[in-house]
Length: 509
Image 1 (tube, helix red, strand yellow):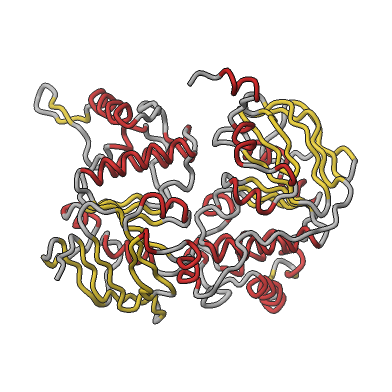
Image 2 (cartoon, rainbow, N blue to C red; image 1 turned 180 degrees about the horizontal axis):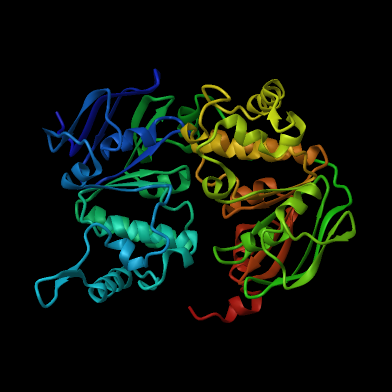
């Protein structure tokens, strides 16, 4: 009988009498990359939080190299050589990269008089050495708040790798990384595997799962479906086991009637963030925006929505110039923006599902500042059903929902405002294939209902599957526009890299 490096046997966990894990077992070999997959809410994160000592299992046993271990805290996990890169990043924004990297294990020096102080110079030097060895260009002196989401993700990854852990849990580690940064991560994973380090890899990006893993374990609704050797399972079979049903079309493209221009952007600029952007978005159309991280896509839509101010250019709605100086004015012009970071800018995590959805229609469901509970329940219930939001009740705290269901709450909130122009910034980031398809179907319904949909995505297949047209940005500029009949990944990447055909021919090999 094979002895595994890590064994989690018959793990059970319930919250408020709701079972989230039922007799789940996970067996992992030393030095393998083991993918853990399933829909949001399948129990993946709960299982890993038990391994990290963040939750206590109601039942079950954990063994490392055949020896039972008790893990009651993250410190216990670290003592047992277990580290985790969390999907939701929690760095300290006003500390430097180096300070975040060595937090809790600072490099110290003794000054005259025996006083021990943090050796900032040594921390910066060591951080730079680690980054250089991994081919990552991040200034160790930079404040975390001045980094992009992708750069912060890389810092968190480096932090976990620098702990010399024997088991590293990676929860959606590439959700905000570029293709180049993802390849850098994969190179580090290969080095770790070669050194006997075990990786538990959680991802909704199935292409990555098949590219990097040795074996795959599938969870569904808190139960173990099975563990399989990666070369022996197909993508379609894996998806069917994850969702419990066959998904025939991942990108359900709906044909809609294209109407007149809903939104026109002329020579739009905002300092160094983006320059001279012009495009139009039609009713009944899904327009995709592609580009690499740092291209200026999010900055552009935030400016259109009034979160920031342009330095030049104009916005026209229904062919009439408008001045949008705040999100409130954008909403008044029937524009909705579903932002990239749902937890930071899309949700109030301390409030209920119902209050998060109804916040945009308080004027319609309240009288003398008192909310009519029946009106709120009716309005919210419509979208809970329409978007298939899985929650114990409308009064459940939104923080208890899975990532996919949280994203549906954000969408529900904005759809209740009855917008004509819907802007979605990375709407499916970090959510599973089942929830993604629900959102794709909703986008198709919006276009068919005559709404104008503007969609930013870093997933090129997603854009190609859903959009009628794609515009591409690079370095804050619009570098290309592609009609659906001409879609190709190669052409999109050429524009995203700001590489013309002539440049491509003479580019050094």
